[in-house]
Length: 321
Image 1: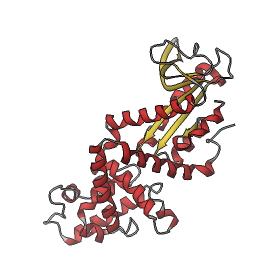
Image 2: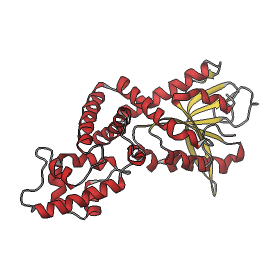
Image 3: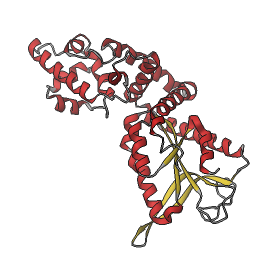
Image 4: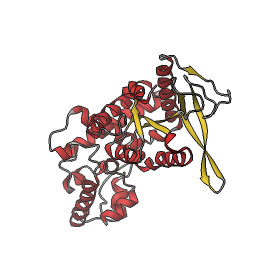
């Protein structure tokens, strides 16, 4: 029986809680430079969204009066639209978009006629609205006024997309260290023994009641070809006899919905390679924190992959730990 993969009625609420968990961590513990940048950008995004009535009144008039919001609006779609991609989809002049996104003086090109500007701005607004990320801007589907928490959550994601902070190695490393520390603390509180790096254990020699980080597990690709699959956490449950296949945990933390959906096939590929090698004895789960929506979760569940949320870490007990 699955722990979370078979409970789609809980996915959206868990996704929201996980986003809030990630945001609280980021604002409290991320390096100050990134916090400051993200805070200022979030404030800008909230202000820009307000000018569009939080995307409920986006039309050519809004863009005409506030040309500087265009770069932010490109980040509200799923996936975010590159500048050249928007130009092609909306079938507008490149000079219009580039002029609106000029950092020093965003504006409508002075030589463009009002008739041409109005037509092309309407085309841009139409594309943005058609591709808007409704998993992020949830109020667009419910037709209810957005709550402050919904606005702040969406603005935080858009701010991340604008600043690019999600891809910085400092942030990625801090996320991983936090997640591994949480798992280590949870296991040690249940009398599991941590095997330090360099001990030389693998999936065949790890003992019941012990766990280790960053272990390579060989997988057979066929034709005598093998690949080492790196797993973040390997745990051997206490009640399992030596030589059983351990539980493998992949720690995933993300500050952006679009990025995880682009990369969701990676976990499925790992799981497929492992099951092709070790059969039904393979145990592989995800440890999630941050921006993982129902689309991502549904894909992983369909591939037979279960998960535990960091904000509800006690679900690990459901995997016989």
